[in-house]
Length: 371
Image (tube, rainbow, N blue to C red):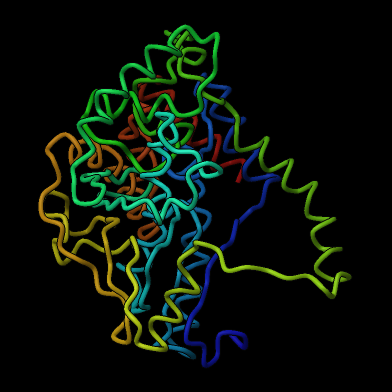
């Protein structure tokens, strides 16, 4: 509370429970039931339990902020983004926006996946004349439009996508972005977040019945625990550098937070992709209580979401399968009723495709006892 007193901006980047025991639990217990994951921080059984651990802590922050800095902006970087940001926006008076850099690098990742862009050869992506329109939900927002110098280049991308997926289909050569290209091939639009993330947001790719899909689409199972171990190993050296190297310098990154602060304080317009409550029907074919990711204008008046209208039907349908889990998890955290936890897991696309109802309930019980 002392640190928050009088703040204008609060940046949230926390992990409740840390790598051990919580992340380990999120992976090891589902494995007992045959449910495999890659990242487990946004959706699925890992995302549900991470949200249940984190929402109470964030609501504690909010109660302090309502008392000692009621006009501050809460800039959330913590996952599961939609669940946590949605809980803050629906359960507190704190001005909250969720921030994720996947919107910023979406278009260039598509061009890189199709071998059409190389930063070393082509220079900064921002200088190449591309313009985008992106909207949906966090980690599953859709590249709705892609133009270069005013010309629609999406048709060319859609023709190239199947060729890339077909080329690497045998699994002998590896490609890191096949899930997103396959989604574009099947649904018509490219998605913001990485292939390892999206592989566990849907029922199609991580399947015990079809283990060959893991090799075919180069899906990195248990990826997040590996990243955690590597990051923890680096923290000792990082701390030493920060404390002892007095000549350290830094450059401003592409992350939104500092740009938002500058825009609000100086009344200089800036555009972001922000996670906000859909209560203004910014996306008309998604629920009002959902947390959506849409373009936002930032200036001295704060953060103002832009109305997008309706998503393509298939994009909205895919988003809704994830929103179901998000809304039920928020209800579980708000009411403390276990039935909502079970229901959130039952509605999860990947979990429901692999496990029976009895297995899902038993898995949730195991997770609750461990936490």
